[in-house]
Image 1: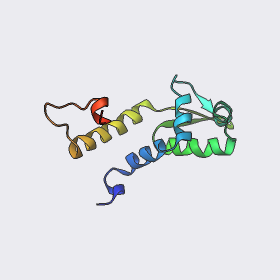
Image 2 (image 1 turned 135 degrees about the vertical axis):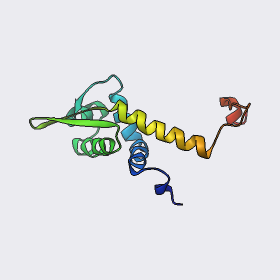
Image 3 (image 1 turned 90 degrees about the horizontal axis):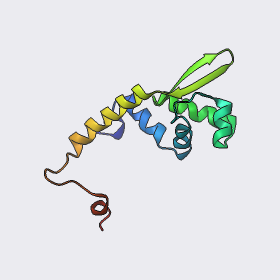
Length: 114
């Protein structure tokens, strides 16, 4: 079984969208529930408008953001419902592939070998 068939295509796009530090930085700008245009994201994140537009598109296709048009401007905001759904799918997969060991909870110091 290849990695792409482990998840529905939407979940694969969600993971891809989160795989970039630039996209993580952009997503962080939306933490407060704010809505931004491409230009505003570019300015806040210190990137070019074309880069911002490309990265916002990946985040939108991954289900992390939604877009709405207001004349010539496109406004982006976080999509918490879709984010929750994708996280739930991932949690289900991880609980099937890597169930917790009964009676043992990994602590950060245990996981790092300390």
